[in-house]
Length: 151
Image 1: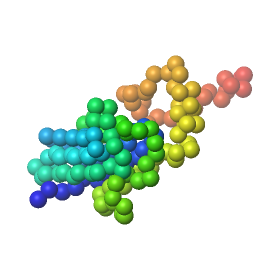
Image 2: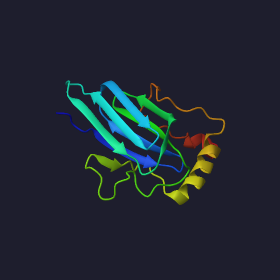
Image 3: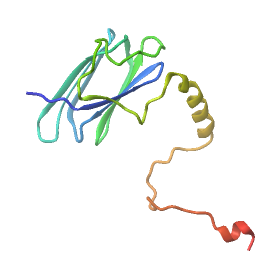
């Protein structure tokens, strides 16, 4: 019998983001179909089978969807057919399955999307993304206050 991994979701007007929490997954299979169907299957670290299928609220573009398999999770970026905000993730009304939860770390409200995308474009201009490979990881650096005062 297969199990369901925890699935976190968030949306923008043009995409749906799914984060599937399944560390060290093997044989990962993700299928997106134009009618709004999404299916996932994988084998966990101890050989157990995980799978689930979703019927999204709206249609999706399979060719515009991307999947990245990481060490701790699988991240799916799914292109919506129309650039609109969905009322909910799934077509079916009612409470979704208990393994599907909102990803509050990626969540944006509909009216916040435009202002946030403008701010992120301004803030990232001319800067490279930090890859986290610093040897001083976890260290906090403060400015030299004596130099700042001019002493």
